[in-house]
Image 1: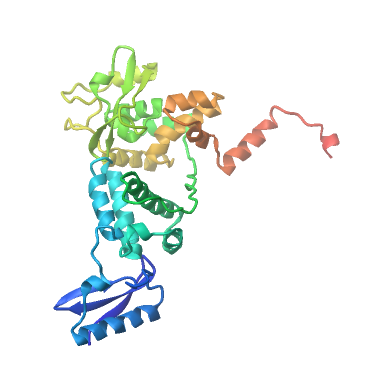
Image 2 (image 1 turned 90 degrees about the vertical axis):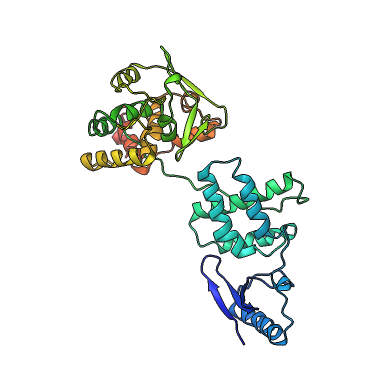
Length: 360
């Protein structure tokens, strides 16, 4: 009598494994009810039934693991293959992690058409992740269902629990900190950092600026690198571009770029475009040299948005400079840490004089 039961830490549920004709079969849920094995007792009970069928020679893998294209594990994998044609590698990697590590172990043997709100709620509650991980994983599943509805494979999308995207603490550099870090970067690498900071560019955008994007008076952000894949348009969408006038700082930075044959403006000594790894290595050395720490993305993009707001520029002006499609994206930059808020309140006393006696 073979077979064994196990606990999966990722999905926080039990499964059993049984051998039939020399092949192992893992069973994650009751084939009659479609319910996962949340307790050891339920897995042991079903294992006993499977063992009995094996002993009697009537075990049928299709009963325990029905193979329908509409099962989540089959449908989701086909969905990933199709999705790979339309999304970046980075996004695809996130979807694959969500599907293979969490969705399939939890509900892989349920027919997509029979997934209900309770299944999704139980799935969300089972995820052993931080808030951001839960948000990304459940969002991937919701995208799968929306695509299935679009393709008319299901009649409706089941209700999903309300998802609030975790807020990221905004950190940014002051002008003084920015200057110290730039001074710690070797001159040969400095231009790409200066231009990125000047316009609040994403790292992938400044890496991908082609020479053809720069005219006598303007610079156009028309493409981006996602990891090392060159894509058209900015992050806001395919074909979306942003156009800026060349500032004095940008002209000075471009003037010190060494001549080269690459179609890209900023390249390494070997003539190839910078990678994220290259830029982060240079940045980390500057952080270590100055004792000032700020992620490169924040140093380029967040810093410009926060600095402009600190100078009193209105939200819509900042939105246009950063290329935000929605003002709510810009409002994130208006949030400050507790220390910054305290400093602002303390500075107010230099402007507003209170009658201390009246206050008492």
